[in-house]
Length: 78
Image 1 (spheres, rainbow, N blue to C red):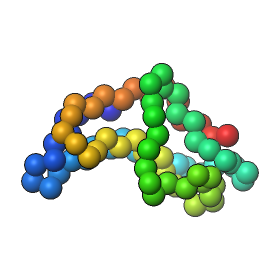
Image 2: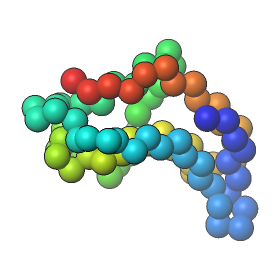
Image 3: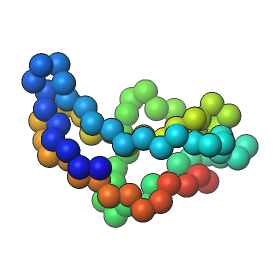
């Protein structure tokens, strides 16, 4: 995902989203994103996901003016 995040005119968000064909397996306790320098954030995220309620996984760049670039090789569950 590459883009310019700008907060002018009430903007300030870009996202890359993967819709899941099936929910993760029962017992899933986390999401793994394979990327060398990735740090998760988000006050609204649960510490442990509810596998049956997940229907997508997204990476979002927001909150301040900046150039965003995220390369992702793999999304998985554990």
